[in-house]
Every structure is written in C-alpha cells, then in structure tokens.
Length: 592
Image (cartoon, rainbow, N blue to C red; front, side, top):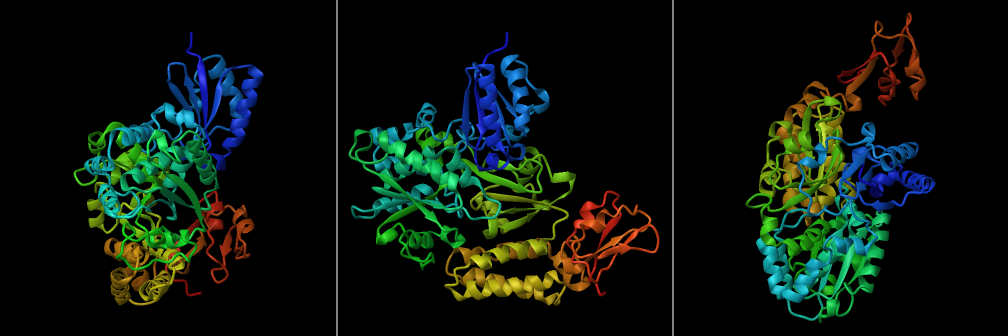
C-alpha cells in the first residue's frame, strides 16, 4: 500500500507566478475538492529550479517528496488521480535525477520552497527565532559578535568585508541611538537572490536583523527594498506584523530589556542606492547620491547616528550560525571564504535558477554539474560575475574557485551573486558596451570621473562595435578605465570599468578584429555583419519575407529570395524563421 500524500507545495515566488503557477495552484484546489482529498496545498517560495517552473512538490506521510516540473493546469488532474489517489508517481512529469541540487549546500535557502513564507508557525517549526532566543537569553552582545567573527562570515553584498568586524565597529560607538539597515536594493542585471529570499523566507531576514541589532545596540532598523519587488514587500509587511504580534519585534523582545523594530523603505530603483551612503541619503528623504568616506556609516550614518548596513544574504546567514554554531558554518568554504554563497545562475545555461554552493567550488562545476552545461550544447566562452561591478572570466579559467580572493585576482568579484553564462555566440566587445551603458545611465553624476569618464568609455565602445577607430584605441580605453576606477567617488564608478578591463585583458583579439578587420567574430555587432541567402539552400517558402519588418527581402532570379543589404536593419528575424538554414550571417563591414 502506498504512503498517503499529506501536502502539495506550489512554487509561488515571482518566477513561478510569471510561468503561470497561480493557475496551477487554483487547479490543484479544484481537483482536490472534486476528489474529496484531505491534502494541504501550500504556497511556497522559489525552489531554485527556475528553468522548470511551474513546480509542484508532493510530500507523503514519511516526508519523502516528488518534484514535478513545468506543470500546466491541464496536468493537475492527472497528478491528483495518478499520484495522490492511486499512489503512482507520474514519471514523465517528475524530476527524477535531482542533479541541480546534488552539489548544493542550502543554508540561506534551507526554507525556500519548503515553508509557507507567510506563516510564522511554519518558520518556527523549522527552528525559526531559536537563534534570536539563544542570543538574547544566553549570550551578551559581545558574545554574539565573537560568534559571527569565528564563523568567518563575510558580507555577501560586494567586497566581502568581515561581518563580525563591521558589527564590532558599530558596537563600540557611544550613544543611545543606533540603526541597523538591511540593504535589499538588488539592482544588478540578471540578479534575483535577495528577492527570492525575501519572498520565500522573510522571517529569516527579520531574525538576522534582530540578532545584529542586539549585537550592536540598535533599537531601530530599516529594510531598503526596491519598489519593483511588490511581492517581497507584501510578504515582508506581513512578516513584520506577525513578528510584532508574537513578541519577536517591538518592546521587550522575549521578555528581555531589548527592544527593536523594523520599517520598510521602498526605493525608487536607482542602482547607485545600493551604495551605503547613497542608500542612507535616500532613507533620509534626500537625493540618493554617495558622500565621501570617512566618516563611515558605523560612525556617522543614518541621521548622523552610528549605522550598520548588511545585505539580505548576510543577515539571512546569521540565524543559522546562532542555531548551529560558528564552527558548523566555518566547516564549509575555504580558509579565507567561509560558508556558502547564493548565486543567480542565468544566461546561456541549461538549468537557470537560484543556487547555493559552498565557497571554493569551481566555476566549471557550477556551470556543468549544477547548471547542466551551456544551452544548446554550445561552447562556454566566459562567465560574467558580480554584475556591472564585476568582470568576465574566460572559459580557459573555468577551474578558478569561487572565493573572494581568487575571483579578485581575475579582475571579477563575487559581488552580490549574479552569474551570467556566455556562449561562443557572444561578442565580448558588445558585452562590455552593454554593462557600460547600464552603469553610465545609473551614475548619479556627482563626481567628474564617473559622470564624464563612463560616458567617454561608452562612446569608445559604441564606435568599436561599429568597427570605427584604430587598435591604439584599446589602450586608450584601458587607460581611461583605470583612471575612472582610481578616482571615482563611490563603488559604482570605481567598479564600472571592470567589464571593460577584463574583456580587454582576456579577449583583446576580439577588439582587434573589430578595429583591424572591421569584423565581429561572434556575428553580433549589426554594423559589422550581413545576412545573405544561399540560393541553393533556399526553398522559396517566403517565411523570411513575411518576417522582415522593412521589406528588404524579395524574389531573386529564380526560385529563391535575396536580401537587399542597403535596406536590411539586421534584426535577425529572417535568420530565426528560416527552417532550411538557408540564411547565413557574414561578418565584415557592409559597404553597400
């Protein structure tokens, strides 16, 4: 006799909702009602396997689970009748070999996809707020700071500054008024780590904030989260209200003399507000621009008071460390980079999603073991790490371990955790242009080197993508990048040149091809490519004609089509539409 099913989990983070999971959830409720089954249907956060959304997980009375992938509303009745009623797993819809999770270690993400993010009871059933209880009832603030120091936890938002050391700076500052700020201003293209944690396990972040506040002596906290994350804000608001009602926030927490409360500040989406001093200005109601440091926020931060700022992932690690101990956390990772790191795995990868790996694992293992390899089995060309502040690491260095020091040597950074996989059809000059375009637009304009320097760099890259200029411009671009890096006021300007400096370092031959030969080796830069039709391969189906938005394709001298290169806008729609591979991309400057 099969073990009865007691619970069905439906992934309803933003990724699941975008894939249609709400319709699956509703269909599941209807089907269970029709079969008169007493089975709990639970909304959970991101399970990590974003490439398989919508995801449904079936849990039996023994706690064994089966994950079903890419479920449509019309699949639900089959799942219910075959698995929940008859007790037979639906193998063709199931994730049989869980290779995606096999090499992961889930600390920050241990509850994501498991608990209902809006249920305080479920969070507590998983050990939630036990870390806070231990801190308040068994440890002094100094003990808590020592525990975090011994764990080796470093800031997960960028440079990797030791968390315990930052807390000790804040704790040493005198004065009754201090602040603890959670930086949830996640603005990197391709990054969704913080959003997923806030949507899937909001109480974890609140508990981490309360522990940090106790350690430094703060009574007020802010979560600075971008307004583009409405679901995260909604779940945070409920979590804060529930935590207050149960005595985990507010006055006299857990019957002690410690009081701490949290306010949400919705940011307008300025990338520069991820920088600490710009974030502080925004919370204060001012324009979000950085200021010079020192003084550092731990001395003079929010409203001139001592302020400690940590990002979402850093704080989400804290409850686990307080529950399991510093040694348990330090047992993962490397000598200088302890614990785990959450990454948003995106780009040309077969298994895109949210992953958590022990520090020290290689880029190659992430891409090929966890990610399943490059999409369409193309060759790996590079991995872009650290967002616009990071750099591009070539495939020849894929064995580099993912830790703070090793990645810094490559010219990239761990950053907040964006990891974008690039295949051999990617133009690295165009990649550098893309990220410079982003940072140039996001520059607050306060300092000259960032405001003017990034604009000049972007102009040079745009010319290079058109095949304009000489090879000597590569060295000029590098020189300008190093100048911007050295003299910009804040982290945005200081790291903006990184994508350029790493691509010119590892892919200089592509820059030379653009400038010496007027050729884009990847066939990406529009001014340097041409689409042509092979008259022998063309079957005259005219699909390309119907797809062309500018009527650049017409009948040739026979049963084939031709492209007028003087009219063609290089949109690539004809290339994508041709079922006979008759349309080819030619690299070289068009002189029509």
